Structure formats: structure tokens, C-alpha cells
Length: 451
Image (cartoon, rainbow, N blue to C red; front, side, top):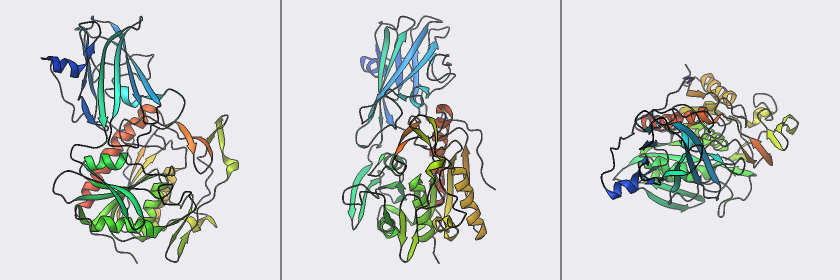
């Protein structure tokens, strides 16, 4: 049976309660008071980006109305902001884990992490950018008196992408261009290769966070990086096979097999790797396609052509902004079936993460088709987790929802789907499920053998 997740709860595990500040250094950590009595307390002061947030205020007048403004400037210089409106409790306090946000802000209700997941780009629709994982992103909080708007207190939090002791190792072996992140300690550690979508280049933020959680993780580039092909035209699966073999040989990687994590185009590459290559134990696919997309894929004497699409089926919810959910040809119909990945060959364990409001393509259809292909070959059905009102770009927790951005293949700005609150729930829950999935299967399974 498929595992269908329709109602998800966020975990409060890992939250810590901080008592009143007792020294000057504590006051600096909790926040700077602009009124002399109000203190905005954020904890922890420094954490990983996927850690939960604890934010409290003391010293307000009972029932006082205030606004909490949050700002983060990403690596591209784009400011992201959110606004929460609150009314102080009977003791002049606010605790975001218990105090509901009022109407009029970018989030409402009891939302401990609302200031983070509700962040919106100030200058239009775009993704949050983080390329240099060696430096944190700084989040600035300010508390304002309403309706006057003057500042009562401020606080700052640094959210990092590399945990203490994680090693970052550039990989330039053979044709492979990647970065390997190794957790602290003697190891060996469960090994994972992480592959992103059609943006190209080398993005490391997911791999570095996974390494911070105990996985030896390779962020693998496959085009538009250094001496790799500049465009998506033809890919050879032998390149990805080299990356798998590198991981299998590494002394810090626990065998006998490794895991794969792919999103979007990275998802169909993961399915192809699992279908043709040895040494794959577990594969997690986030909003991926069961058909080869974007560029022809070659392996030995086999070619999977890129599946076509019908531009006439692009919808325009706004002028110049496309909705491409229905444009891809059906890979179960001829002649498109040549692009269908033969997932039934795979012997590894699968986890499919599916956003039901994915506007890039029908992720639910692709996951179900993969399940059917496996069942036809007598294989175990994968775990499939569905997230209502989540969009295409499911990231680690607390990344802001990307509503729309430029699509490299289609060549125009496209909507990605999702509602901010539901999308945030999907990101928190799926991130934990992915880690649990890899921990379960990378500890005990044997590498798959191919026909």
C-alpha cells in the first residue's frame, strides 16, 4: 500500500526554553531593547538553517499591539521580508509557539516558524539563493509599536548550512565535478549523492545540511559548471556512474551501497541511475519525472530521448507568466514511450515526495507510474508521500516558497505552485522523512544487482 500523507503536524523537537538574561552578554544574545524595557529574545543565536525557531518578547504592556518584522537578504542581494502582528498577553509577554499572529500580516495563527517560512521576496517572484555554504544567512528581527511603528527591540540570528566539524572537499576526479561533505567523527557514514534540477552549476546547500545531519553527501554538478557541458543537450550516464563509484570507494562512506536524492530533473536522473547502475541501495525522488527530460540520456548502447512537450498547452494565469503543468507528452503513449525510464529494472528502495499543486508537471502521475512499473516486475511498492497545496520547489525547512521564476527549458517565467503555509509543512515533514528513509535503508540493504 502507498503511504499517503494528507494531514501533517510539525514537530517541536529540539526547541529549548531560555530563562531571563542574567548578564550583559545574555542581553546581547537575546536582543537589543530600544525602549529600555522590552526585550526580543531569539534562540538559538546560531543554528543550522533547518533548525526550528524560538522567539519570545518580554516587557510589553498587557494587551499591547505590536508587529514583528523579519528580513533576510540572500546571496543575490534580494531582500526577503515577513510581517507578523501580535497582541501581548496578560503579563506583557509574547511567545510565538503559543501566541497567535493576528490578521494583517503575512501569516496568522500560532506559527513558531512563521517569520521564516512566510518570508517573501521584496522585488518580485524568485528563489532564495545560497551558493557559498561556508557562510551563514543572517536573519534580522525587529519589534515595532503599533500603530506608530517605532522600534521597541531588535535581534539577529545566524542560520548556517555547515555544522561544526563538517568537512567540505572539492571533487575533481576523472570527469566528476562535485563537492563532498563529510560529517565530523571517524565514520564511515551513510553515503548520499544529491542532484538538483535544470538550473545547472553546483549547488551545495542540501548536501551540506545532510552532512550536518550525519550523511556523507556529494553535491553533484552535471552541466554548466567548469569544464562540464554548458547546455542541456546530451548526457552520458557513465558520468553519474563515475560519481557512484567514487562514493563506493571512499573510506568515509559506509557500504555496501549508497543513496540518491534528486529534485525535478535531478529526480529523473536518480531514476535512471537506479535503473541502470550498480551500488544503489535507496533513492528519494522529490517532484521528479518518470520520463527522461530536457536532454537525451545515453548509457552504453542505450539511449533515452528527451520527452517532448506541446507549447500550445501553456496557460498564462498572468501575462508573461506560464503554467506548464499540462505541456509534457504522456510517456505511456507511443512514440513517447521511448523516453520512459525502465524503473522496473531497479532493485533499490524508493521514496517519492509528491506536491499535489506542482505546476511544473504532474508529479503525482509520475510517482504512480513508477510504482506501476515496479509492480509489473514484481518489485516492492515504494513509499509515496503526498502533500496537498505544496508546490514544485520543495526545499529544506524554512526556505521561502518560490512562487515563480525563469524556467531554463521552456524559456519563460513559470509558476511553480504551492500555498506558503502548506508548502512549509511539506518542507519540514519531507526533510525528516528523507533522512529517516536513508538511515533505515543505508544501514542494512545490499547494493542492487542489474540484469
